[in-house]
Amino acid sequence: MTGKPLRIGIVAGEASGDILGAGLIEEIRSRVPEVEFVGIAGPRMLAAGCETLFPQEKLAVMGLTEVIPHVREILAIRKQLYRYFVAQPPDVFVGVDAPSFNTGLELKLRQRGIKTVHYVSPSVWAWRQYRVKKIARSVDHMLTLFPFEAQFYAQQGLQVTFVGHPLANAIPMEDQQVPARQSLGVDAQTKLIAILPGSRISEINYLLADFLATARNCHRENSELRFLVAAAGERAEQLIKTIVAEHAGDLPVRIVNGQTQEVMAAADVVLLASGTATLEALLLKRPMVVAYRVSAVTAWIARRFLRINRFALPNLLAGDSLVPEFIQEQIDPRSMAEKLLFYLNDNNERQRLRQQFESIHRQLRCDANAKAADAVLQLAAKQ
Image: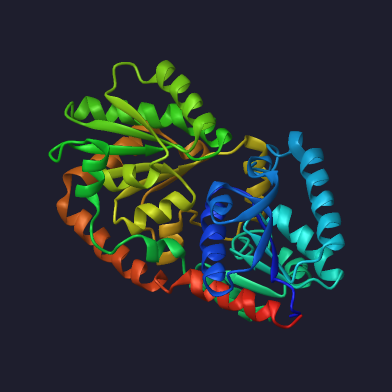
């Protein structure tokens, strides 16, 4: 590196990437105070001192068919980012998740001599494995959150580091239900189910009505149950309020915005969309039922390329069916209610799950921010 301040390009495409990006920024800044970060950042990364060139929510689109209306705008953003970084080259570029967006950008930047790191493995081990060839051309160093991902890339000959997950360090091993309930004003004796329909608008639209139907089925069996619905941001909260008004009826449900982790920690069991929240629920040692739905066309395309028979992160990490998962047409409020009530009523099963979740928690507790910073700074030093 030269005498100029270290300059790092970084792009995170959604809320989970914002958490990872912020942790990386804070760790690097603690070692190199004069470092500059610029790219696409969420609120946590902005607070950590990253300059953002575009709003992060422009990239937070999921699915294959769902992205089509946004393609032109997303491609225009990527083109502008490419021109910006070529004109003002960073010492290293870090793409945080968002593989469809970042891998293409990384490929072009690497062709221009800019070192690239991709933080969070694309799910090539699960579907569309042919993508690994493009990834190998695009990325100097892959950082994975989970050990089975690092094994896959090592077998493909890529430079890879398993860093663990920052959440595993951030979330204590000890149970957090008591302080979470105090924070949310929930009585210690209340039987509570947390509902997390996802952070994306499309996820909420696809899942929340069925999640509320599941809650109604649970409430018919146990009228003492109470429900918290977690909202991730104001747009999500407004949509959730609309759907709750249409579908909840007299269900004792409360919407909580911006405290997703506290909502899960306070609950006895969790009903949630597949994604990073399932990892948080695991680290909080909460029994869960996981569901996911995309458009019929996206699902049809995905099934042609899938190479796994599980999709929930706890099940992938365990290599076993630890928690129930429901996808697409399998989503059934009665069946999901049965699973939730089973966890509520079976203390032995809750304890069995807790032991397995604790084991995975310890495995992922590797000080991920420090390991990721090590890899990024090492690569930047080779400029």
